Length: 420
Image (cartoon, rainbow, N blue to C red; front, side):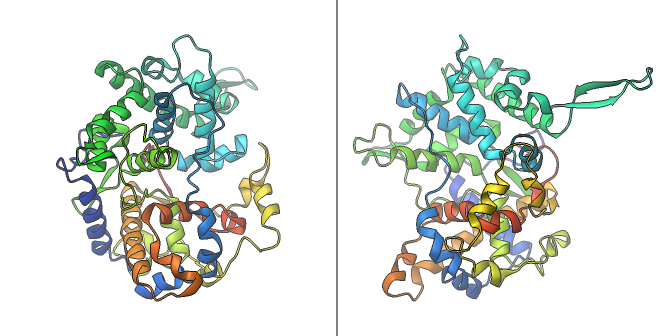
């Protein structure tokens, strides 16, 4: 989370502009190339045309739960967003439970929601007071947060102590929940959903009933909660990403934007920057859009080699034989060896990861601009209506399709990270 040495947040009223400007400047300064022809090739590729329409809205938000109020549902979506991290723990999670990072967080939240705790685990007080032991229990990780070591004085005896990567994850998740709960309690809010709805109403546009100003809402959320303050640096300049805050706004639009009565004011998210994590930049490398060969960040030049761009773009998981078998094997139950078959991606430093995430944001802006003027006819005219959130949803979801889940590596950031 943020620290005293973290870069300053953008001035009020400039968050969205600052994301775009800082990411474009970072990509150019790092000399990560994005060629127009590579964008056209992606937009006209088999993988894009065969999967985009059914994957563009797949952000993993479907929840089989009944909610007593809109505040309760907004609360769950908001907690899902602030906890939308843990990418670096994908392999140990797969080995322990058969689930990836995002699904593990969903399991945690389902358990918190269904808990009969007197205080209510999803209330502000519940978040403030939840323990690591309870978090580990609800994540189904209780048996995976200990390390065994020899007893210091009794030969042949081993003792267990808390530790290992999954204990670290439990510690990070608990820390974010406790901090968020404390902020909410001190500010007088009953839960995070109540805060978010208040922010949406603060951003209500007088001239557009039911529409909230995304800039105002982002400002309220990001400045209040350190776990949303997704800011890095490169060459002494800040890089603004704010992935989880952007994800939250679009998640609310996907869930409530179709309601005829607009029960809460919502922002227009069609033109917001993408929600850059580790998956989307990695996929843009594998699809040939991000060219790292001449970057001024030496460790990135060969980070993903070899890259089979042509084979990836010509792949159609909707018709390829064995895609279901591959998916089933890799999403097997705990103890399955499917996780061992996944391609291992590069481990990047915090700064390297921010540079690549920034380049992905700028590249997606370029892709959408190119799509609007692409020379297409007939059944391909839909490409011209491509939006940034749809592109984000597609890139994130296509990474899980068929052999791509197994064969295309994703980078991971070393160290403790709660931003993605």
